[in-house]
Image 1 (spheres, rainbow, N blue to C red):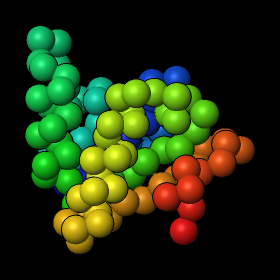
Image 2: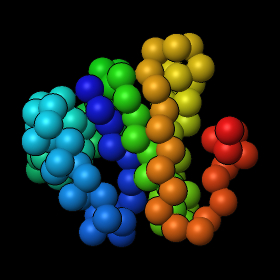
Image 3: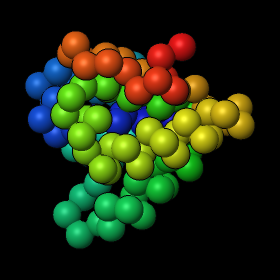
Image 4: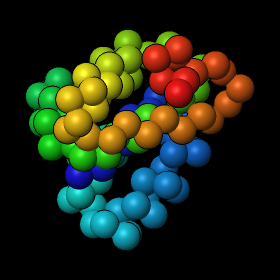
Length: 105
């Protein structure tokens, strides 16, 4: 499972990548809010489910995503999981914002 973490303001950049990944791996293997969460779903429950299954966590880092509390919860949980060797965290910088120090290596 690939988890795509981003802020909704960055969708114009992130969505084409999500669509390409879904073409290659299948939509059911890519956790992306546009198709992984439906109206009426519990956001926290779905996010937790997606994070639990993720093997690759793509974190689209931008000023928008770093100011989002929800995105912060996502990437910090992925970092903990990655520190235990249970997933790969892949930060992808979208703008000139500095990476959080813990992700700068």
